[in-house]
Figure 1 (tube, rainbow, N blue to C red):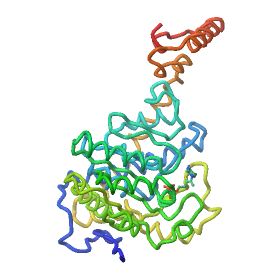
Figure 2 (figure 1 turned 45 degrees about the vertical axis):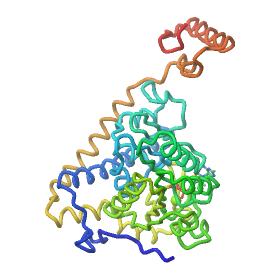
Figure 3 (figure 1 turned 90 degrees about the horizontal axis):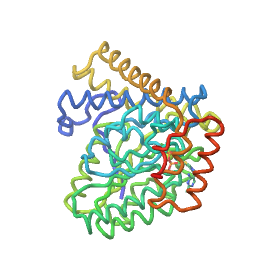
Figure 4 (figure 1 turned 180 degrees about the horizontal axis):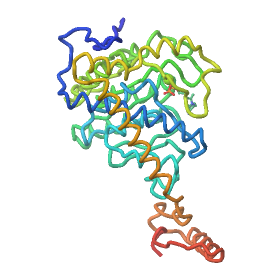
Length: 373
Ligand SMILES: Cc1ncc(C[n+]2csc(CCOP(=O)(O)OP(=O)(O)O)c2C)c(N)n1
Ligand SMILES: [Mg+2]
């Protein structure tokens, strides 16, 4: 089967076919647009903070903001998200605070995971945003399992969204997750952000097939190919897949065709392996620019307002980063917390050694930070 790519907004910001134009209110549209600006601003600052040595590591999603916003706007409060490391934008859309994002990057005392995870490996309990893990694809089989639980045991009508890259479709977890979700008609939406690269491996070295989406048929589920730089197309395709899932009709595979405009992470230099001309071609397809052109041409946004929105996004990010920087590192005692409900003797002895040592060094020990004594 040949898949036609769904596009609603053309690169010049005009609507391809009036009939497919979504019916959002002005408020909703501007909220979506501002979310995209916030994600871009967060990434700019995150990268700068890494470059200036404030934080150790950062993963930006430059160019993939339409995927982040279009997808996450469909999630209801109790739906679940099993993300990849490039999806913190979806957490922002779901209400995670900028400060909690920076706290995690610093691994400071207010970090929700207490500095025990790699930087950029966020989890937000309040947003049903399941912990990011580095081994590629683990989120896919976890999502299938959560979907099976929702379908077979909980019967709660919640949908599970899992997001991953083109390279991740080469993992065993992609195969097992797709298989189990399909066989059990689990309410899972598999969202592949095909950004053309897996670090320095181009997508044509990743797939034997022409597209990712054509694999859907072999697993017995519908597949949708969508322009990933078009926030309307991403939103609409995920909306339809969610409706199917909620009705008990099972999973869908969505391939969003997009581009990683930035480096893989702050540890990567893409100029070593990719063509500047390719980047320049995609720069013209920037999802934020496209959405802006739409909003300006439909008179929902002026250049002046746009400037204000950018400044506001950058200010919010700056303020949150500044607040986070002030927070001290977690006390060493916290190492012992949240591990055992009944603390084993050997661990208690280690804790007491640490406390004795800290006291000798004149460090004040906060027992409330440790397990109950
Ligand atoms: C199982 C596994 N294999 C290899 C890696 C190393 N690795 C980290 S990110 C990455 C590229 C993944 O590319 P893709 O799935 O396209 O996602 P993107 O980074 O483009 O968003 C690789 C190979 C890993 N983390 N886990
Ligand atoms: Mg990729």
